[in-house]
Image (cartoon, rainbow, N blue to C red; front, side):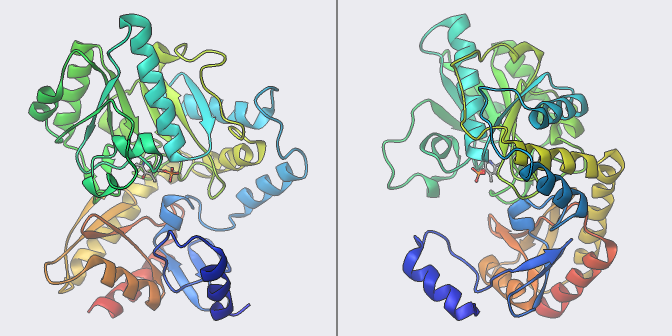
Length: 391
Ligand SMILES: *Cc1c(COP(=O)(O)O)cnc(C)c1O
């Protein structure tokens, strides 16, 4: 099928809810992808942070194929090995106590919102269900996670949104002003992804954890984008030196197959019991086997290299001193690049994509989320395209 044929069928039969690039991808290897016509693209996007171990990693492919030929689904009414192994790996490496599995980031956040409300209900009863979230946050596209999202552009058309969310700026005074007897939790991304790759100030995070302890609020962390090695530790909270009561994850966990979920600490292990929460596809054996392979590939050494790779890319981008770009920010391989006034990040991103470097935007800047297994050679190829396209 040619690209024009493909696009014609898409525009006739697919709900046009995405602002897509004029690019189709057919196959790939590592951080190199190919269109149906054989055109090469360097992957600095990972399909929005999902392809944590790149495309078609041999260990990932083998794990998925083997599990698909053995058991593709069974439901949580029965035990099966892949998700039990996955839960053990995640808890052992994160210091958390137990895991729940669903299918997406929004669903994972819905889960920790339910967890916080039930935890509070059992202790304090009705009327303490409000959750404080931060301005410029992003938590998902369901009605409830949109309500939690701290960006006004998302609060249109779909009224009524779920009640019980209050917004604050990422500083302790603002959170204190949002406090009240009706609050049960705060929910934050430690590096705000969609909002512009904005890391929270570590001092603010420390103060927030103390405030949560003082007020008996749960500390909830949305690691949907930051989790699974993206920032240079398996979870970003490990680098901040804090332990959340619950942390959601999704994007990179299964290396391209749909999976999301959350981890809870010892205090919250028993909050949800039989009948409180469920997901038909949750912990699907193929996704879980893929996720086990992802965690094996992303061993401690590989995760530690993420920091060095991030530093390499940021230093190279800053050294180019491109007229349309400002400074870089972020953690590990979650990189934001400032776009100077007079240039549009969407326009620059479209140019990079067309030139063969798959890139993303976030806030008003550019965002790069390459596979965590990207090689030096692949990074250099991407940097060459970046320089040639934006000079
Ligand atoms: C992508 C994202 C989500 C939503 O994940 P979906 O899988 O699209 O539902 C939620 N929170 C954060 C921080 C994200 O980056």
